[in-house]
Each structure stands twice: as C-alpha cells, then as structure tokens.
Length: 298
Image (tube, rainbow, N blue to C red; front, side, top):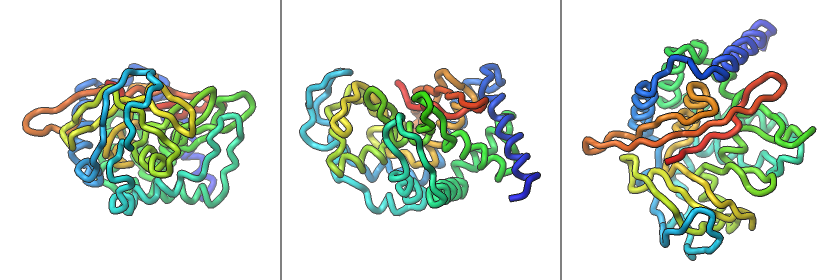
C-alpha cells in the first residue's frame, strides 16, 4: 500500500469522524426508514425462517430468576446457515479477543487478515453495496469502495480504551461478542448468543418483550441473561439478521444519528411493517471516533 493511498485513507477516516460528530447532517427520519426497510428486503442471507425459538416464560427486566429451563434456540447452531461466507468469516473472529476491557488487545497479523476477510465477504453482498450508495448520497462516506472499506474497518475494529491505560476494546468486540467491566456489556449478536448457549456458557432466563419485523415470527427480543456466570439484567438482540445487515444498520445509524436513537423499519409484509430504533454511542480516542455501542431498542 503506497503512501498516497494511506494518506487518502486517513483523510477519509477524518472526514467520517467529522460527519459522525455532527447531529445536523441532513439525513431525514424518512430516509432512514426507507433505506432500512429496503435493506431488510435485500437480506437474502438472513436466517429468519431457519431458526426456531423456545421463548418459554415471560419475565421482567432485571429478574435473576431463571424462567426458561430450555435454551432459547431450540435446534442449537444452524450449521447450514453458519457455512455461508459472511457467517463463516464472522465466526472466525470470535476467538480473537480478550473479554476483559482491563487487558490490552494484541492484534496478530493472522487476526488482521481475518478482519479483512470478514469485510471482503461483507462487501460482496448487495446489502453493503446499497449501504455504501446510501451513505455516499448523504455525504457520509467516500465514493471509492476501498476507502469506504477502510473507514468501516476503522470504526469497527479500531482499538480504544474503556479502562485507563488499557487499549482493550473495539466496537466489534463490544457489540458482537460482549465485554467484561463491572459486569457484562454489549453482546447484541444472535450468532454469538447461539454459539455461547450451545457451549453452555450462556443461560437464557426468559424474555421481556419480542417484536416481529415481517421476516420470521420474532425479529427482536429483549431479555435478561447470564454469560459465563455473570448476570446481565437487560439486553436486546436482532434474531435471524445476517452479519451484513447488522453491520449495515448499525453503521448507518452510527454515522447519521450518533449518540442518539435512529429510526428503523422492518420489511413490509402483507402490507404492514414494524418500526423500532437503534441506539448508538460514539467512543473517542486519540482524536478519532469509533463505535462505542449499537443495539436495537423497542
């Protein structure tokens, strides 16, 4: 990679940082509802109809009582789904991180290669291509695909501090895997949930709310859980959405509605659709801005 291209990437990332920091970026709620519904309709890799849930007993937010003796995912890991390219590349990243934010991450060349492979797979999908076009049209992304890919890798995989002196966190780790700091935080990926549940490391305690989004009976779920014995009183997950759709929606909201609620619409089905919001938070480190958190709320 030559020096001119590296400099271009840095300028592009700085441009994104400026855009992310500004609330008045001209992106309307209607535009966000339209693009999100369109992306749901394009999500051919979604596993909505391949998953069967054991919802069991409804519980209350913050309840430590286990009201769900059975796993949430009735059939365990959907192996055929996880063989698809974006899922397989996502799963390859799951062993790359130290769960505690009090430990500095040491990223190896192999791990960097796995991050690149994941984004290469994402960028081969119609969902990410449409996301790029939308962000370019709103002045929130560079038209050059390679520059945009570097911008995305930076906001998701760039390391920052949640504990003093320890560069031990990234947006990807927080949102998709979960982290430990005075409890468990993050872990908003159904892929991570089902893999950890299958290993016996995650205990589903019941649900507080569910919402259908036009694909499958459950599109969002709100629940308490225990992960590696640590209680998390409240969490939300998208159910069945592909890695590319989650990255797309979270990235759009991070850029268009930083540190605030972002309106989202599910796919229109039988003339109806359901709306919810995505909450994003920006983490700032050394003058740069990264995904601090992103999750659905309803």
